[in-house]
Length: 337
Ligand code: TXA
Ligand code: MG
Image (cartoon, rainbow, N blue to C red):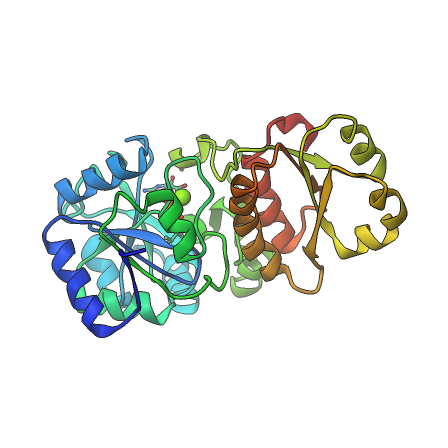
């Protein structure tokens, strides 16, 4: 694998040079691996859309190193926006704000709003400081594929399309940032849920602030209407052991993803099913590992040519809400959720 490099300062210099020559490079962050380009350069941004086969109406997040840079590219007008920025950035949270004209329209898909994120990961922070530019960076996968959480996953998806992938083990969190919009001092709308949950935001804000989820998938965030995070296998949710028994009649290769609690309770029935591979690393005690494992697991299923993935349906509370949000986007039959 000749285009995978270590996160060494020399390689950062090569990456900077590539970016100034309109090439795309891949870096790790705390959430997923991302594909970088200069946000102020329309040709480079166009190349991102082309490389990923990304629909032009799906806007990109602009990444910055410093809080003090936000006002160069967006307008902060409410105290609630300031509070969220001061308390939660840098961290896996993205805030959608009115954009300044310096941000090209292609970045925001012609929306007057721009999404801003400050990554917390050291490599991403160091490189942002070295290039000293706002960077558009979607997840480093082809559109509709699962977001990559290791350099190896990136290589399999985009390896032939990018000259440089910086390798840095597996991302800490494994699914993308929480995206929020704060229209006034009393409301927060969660456009994409993840590790910073509704409860976390509620605890941080004054009591009279109302926090809600975007109602329709596309509300305020066009990207949400597209199918995402899909492995090649068909994905179904199940609730109980009867659901699983009904799937095991064919000769198809099936993977079962369930909590350890479910597997130990139903071990006897499950061990009779010959076509079933059991994946049991979901535990209630480590929700971040569950999330981190989800995309890894989808990639593994693609590699092993799995036909069907059965995923346990979990109560939509706390981070389970975010994990189920990602699972739901990959379902073959959303009605089963
Ligand atoms: O953790 C993350 O957020 C990762 C890392 C690489 O930072 N990025 C990421 O980017 O997941 P991407 O392009 O895969 O997803 C960006 C999401 C999409 O759902 C898009 O619709 C939404 O953010 N978004 C971007 N700009 C927006 C805007 N101006 N208004 C509303 N939603 C926006
Ligand atoms: Mg993505």
